[in-house]
Each structure stands twice: as structure tokens, then as C-alpha cells.
Image (cartoon, rainbow, N blue to C red; front, side):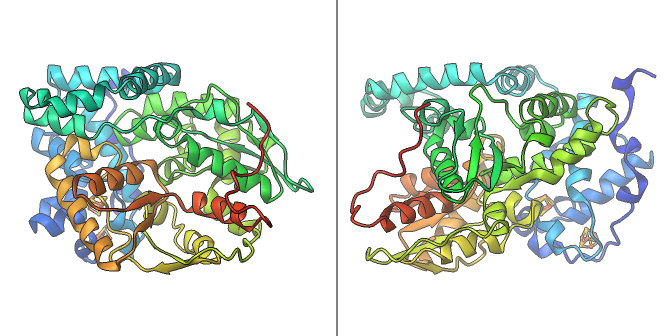
Length: 449
Ligand code: SF4
Ligand code: SF4
């Protein structure tokens, strides 16, 4: 049989397919079910459809394909499920099945996927090239000129919306801010690799720099090779396990797990995927064993800092700032890293943490969901911003590039004076402020890239 003819859902371990006991406890936690109250938009309904296909009782239809892409992949259902249903695996296999059958294929969709998933994200040199073009467009003032001129009104509504979501590209990418090896401050306790990400590198390279600084201050020698690769989560979550596996091999080659105590990411969405390379590469004899070791060492930054007993910043006499925390779905539901970011924020002397209602409810970003399902994504964003407003804070911390971007765009379009930042950036700032006599300290002098 040609491997391309092999059904992903029929080939999935049946113990995963049959786990659901139809209790419905996940339904109230599912944002799409909450919005429509339709069973097919719920985890239980979706799992029933997947099982019917796996059992050969249902063909892959267009409706099934659309349903799989209406699901956010937020994994809130996995937190609620008493039976331990592995929805992440079901969901990835279901989307791979949709792509294998080509049931949603249309020329425009195929072109966009070929350009982004199969080309742009497979080699980040291309991504950085486009990042530089957008940065140039923004820095010479062309973007604001075009926005002010009203010329954008000539574009179709959807393109206008997409233009409004264009992120501000950082003046320098990670490799221009961070040396390939940053020594530990004081005694070296660990050697860690640090993934600088794809979108993260272009839009939040400052967060990457802060992460390296925080790690160095906590006794870690940090290895950040320039020319890194995407973690492959975009591919894994969008029905391309073959491309995801290719990127997993590249990452394992770049960060051989036997040479590191931990491999760190500061993005919840990436971390959730990075911890499952072993499944992706289980049939590859050259990588299977290393992938198991990789999974063991892949760590979210908050998880790692708490594990190694991070140093709490000293009191610094700064005025108190009130901060709320939005949980990235893939950090909380995907990785179950829930308490650690709060512990880090709680350790900052001048910071008062105000709990956000529904803090682990999706903000609508969900990878590229805000691009593919704008209506549902905007509903979720409005709900999130309503809750943020109710906390009366002016700072929101969150640990995923998609969430950061979604909230920055949301605050801008709603005219909210809100600082959106990463918990690790707040920790890095607190360390700097704690340094005696450095009122406006610019940060630890890291070695030049
Ligand atoms: S992943 Fe999120 S949107 Fe999808 S079924 Fe689960 S809770 Fe609902
Ligand atoms: S996924 Fe879990 S919580 Fe939801 S219906 Fe099935 S067993 Fe119940």
C-alpha cells in the first residue's frame, strides 16, 4: 500500500480512539460548544465523528473537515476529561486525515498552505527575509502613511483585517541580540539549549533576550545557535506530520539532547509540541531513542526555573504594578504548567497579581485560528478583553507568542492602554531593578552576538 493511502485515523492506536465514555463533562469547557451549543462543535461530538471514521462507518466528508478546523485545538477538553482522553493525538490525526484525503482542497487554500506551511516555515531564513521586508516597510513610515491615506479601504474587508493584524517587527532578531553561547552568571550549574522560535524571533526577540538573561542569572550556560529551525507545531497541528517530523530531526541534530541538561522554550504552543517528538519519530531508528531523551529534556522556561529553584528578585523600591495573567492554552492544558508562571510573577517584589476570570479560556489566537476563523476568534478575543478590563490592571502577562500578539492587537483595536508582556520579561526587569543603585538599569551585559 502506498503510505499516502494509509488512513491516519484507522491507523491510530484503538485504545486512544475508544477512550471517550460520552460523559459530557468537557462540554462546558469547550469554547466552540459554548458559542453554538451544537453537539458536533463539542469535543464529544468531534470524537464521535473521528471514531466513526476510524471504524469505517463514516467517510471523510467536507463537513468533517470543516469541523476539524473549527476546533481551536485549545485542549481545554483534556483538562476537564476524567477519562484522560488524548484529544491532542486524536485532533492531529483527524487533521492529517483531512489533508490526506484533500477533502477541503481549493486552489487558494492549497496555494496559501504551500507558501506558508510547506515553504516559509520549513526554512526560517525565508521567514527572516520576509521579516526584514516588513520591517523596512514599517520603519520608513510607509505602513503608517498607507494607513493614514485611507488607501486600505480599497482592499476587500478581509485583507483590511489582515493588514491591521500585521505585527511590528523587532529592530533586531534573536541572533543579533544573543551570542551563540551565553555564560552562566557565577557558578555554572546547568548547560541548556534555548529555542528562539519562528514568529517569536521576528516579533518577540526581546523576550528571547530576557529569557537568556534570566537563565544566565540562574546559573545556566545558554546555547542559542543562530540559524535555528521552527519546532514544527504549525505543521503537526495542521495535518502535516511528515513535515513536522522533518523539523523534529533538524532540531534534534541542532540540539543533541545528550549534550544539554534541558532544552528550553518560552512559547507555550511550541513547548506543547516539542515534548512529543518521540511519537513523531517512533518509527525512525536513527532518531527514535534520541527523541525520547529530547522529550524528557524539553522544558518550558517557567517549569525549568521552578525546577532549579530560581532566585527571587530582591526588593527594589519600585512602585507597585498590578498585573493579571492569561494562560496560554498549550501551556496550561497542553503542558499542565499552571502554577509555575504564577510562582514567578508572585516572586516579584513590586508586583500584585490579580487573577483573571477564565484565565485558561482561549483568547482566539490558537496558532493560525485567528487568520482562518476570524469570527469565532474575535468573539473569544472580546470575551478575554472584557475579563482583562474587569481586573482593572494595565499589565497582562502571557507566555506564548500567539497570545501576546492577539492581545496586543486586541488592545490596540479596542483603544485599551494595556501593556502585554511575557512573565519572564517582568522577571528580567525585576532582576535589573534589584541591582543596587541601577535605577534605569539596561540589563545584564550579555556577551555580544
Ligand atoms: S480542543 Fe478546544 S475547541 Fe477543540 S474540542 Fe477541545 S475544548 Fe473544544
Ligand atoms: S472527552 Fe472526556 S469529558 Fe468529554 S465526553 Fe469524552 S470522556 Fe467525557
